[in-house]
Image (cartoon, rainbow, N blue to C red; front, side, top):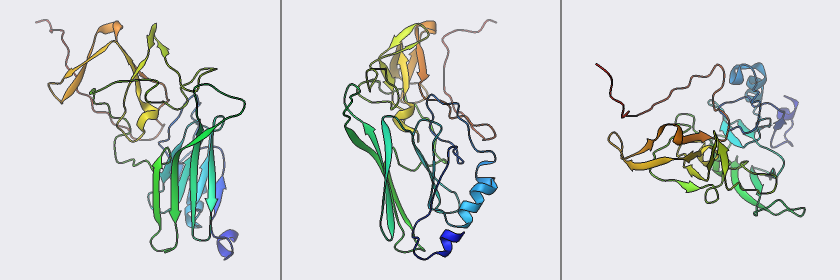
Length: 251
C-alpha cells in the first residue's frame, strides 16, 4: 500500500516461496502450494495494490501466469543451473530466464537465455505484455498436455529441462519400469517440452480416430512424463482420450 502511494516507485515486486496461481510446472518437488490460491487474502491484496510480479519457487521449474482479472503476474523459477534476471526502467521491465548450457556441468559455467517476458506500462490503461520460451504466459484455457503420436525425438534432440544426471546437463536416457528409454514424444500443450513424454516400445501409425496413433504392446511399451503433476488439489481437471483395443470381448 505504501509503495503504491510513493510516485517514485514505478514497479512493485513481491517474493515468497510457494506458488499461488496454478497450474505450474513441477519437477522433483513436493509441489506445495498456497491455500485458496487467487481467492486468498494474500493474492487479493497484491491485486488490490497493483503488484506487478509475484516471484515464487518451490517446484524446481519455470512457469509464468497472469491473474485472470488484473495485470499481476506470477513468475515461478528454479535455482541451481538456472536463474532469472530482472531489468527495469521508468515505464517497463523485463524478466529473462537463463539456463546452463553445454554437455556436462562445469566449474566455470556458460548460460543461455531460454525465455523472456516484458511488461510495458507506458500507457497505464493499456499495459502490453509479451512473452516467449520458458517465460511464455500459460493460457489455462488450452490443454496443458496434448500428445498427437505423430513423431518422436531423442532426449538429446529436444531437451526436457531438469532431466539430467550427475554429470550431464541433458540426460541421454532414462530408466522406466525395467526399460531404458532414449526417445520422447513432443507435448503440444501449454506446458510444452518440459512435459514431453518419455516413450519406448510404441509404434506410430496412421490413426482411425485422428490422423496418427500409437500402438502399445502390453508390458513392452512405456510412456511416462518426468515432470510432476500438473494435478493440484481443489482444481478442476479434465481428460480426453481416444483409444482402441485389439482384444475382443467375450460373448
